[in-house]
Image (cartoon, protein in one colour):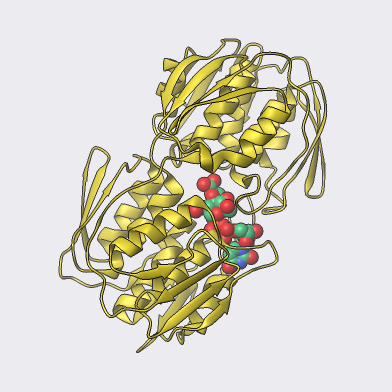
Length: 421
Ligand code: EPZ
């Protein structure tokens, strides 16, 4: 395993181009299972998670050709409806092959995804939605076994105790495209990645209205054809580089993004006193102009503040004088980064779903351990500004969701390199 070694203290300046959105491309890959025709997906980031989903598609009988950031998916004629535990357990997002497999093949056997460090990650809403579409669902030896001679459209309320579910919305929406009649998904997720999936499905011939709102209407069709699609930019990667500019007191032009997807984060950073200027419809400049003020943050489903930016803004608040309270409402246990940041001299207290952050003048470099994708990013951000050397181990977590992360940071002036553990 590799680790990242970071020498803190450099001010990041320059420009960075954002890659395609991991959380859009994964369900879009799953949607290719709904047709035997060729699909061409562009702006695919080269990540561990996209590689995992490609392996799953191949295991399900698809031929997948990756040429730089363009993926072509075609059918080999071989059919397999079983998504294996070995692959699904490494990436819970692969659970979103269930809906398309069931719709296309009338049966599916998908391993239940494990939990992960950010929470138990249940799938009850996925199963509730598919059962509502007339699927027969059972749990057998850690697998979801689903059968349906004919999926039938229904009005489904898909809200859970933590609000809407991104991948449950994706799973049910994909299944409903080939169901008989009309499906209405109430309390659907509104994330940009769900919109991107919906747009891809519509290009495939699906009849969908309201994607991006809490009420999605799908009129089932008999057949979906292939399509070509350019994946949206990754708003979480863009947000991570915005924080990188501010935490190092730097100035970064972030290109190839949709600033409209970043409203809650931009609002919070402006409240803190950052200078965020929209340069044009796909780039913005994040600049440190004066000492930042602490801000309180509560994570919510989109368009609220994204849970996937919680760890990163915590690193920024850890070095912002004053007290900020960060409340995690999506995954109340998503605080693995707190202990590691405290090892670097941060002063953060956990109170249930709240983290009370008292900004310190300076963090000190230390060996820290990555635990999940976004926590890893927050530790790298802290290392960029800490005094001395920080080593972040288990950086395979980072490679799951950030394409060429260290190269992009090095090009901005960061002093960091990779070493064997
Ligand atoms: C997606 O996960 C993202 N992953 C996550 O990003 C992101 O944090 C999450 O949405 C929330 O925005 C991908 O898109 C691949 P959810 P997903 O279902 O769909 C609960 C990252 O770092 N819930 O929207 O799995 C769940 O426990 C990753 O890129 C149920 O209770 O998340 C959570 O508390 C991490 N029952 C809340 O809903 C269910 O059946 C939101 O989860 C499903 C979810």
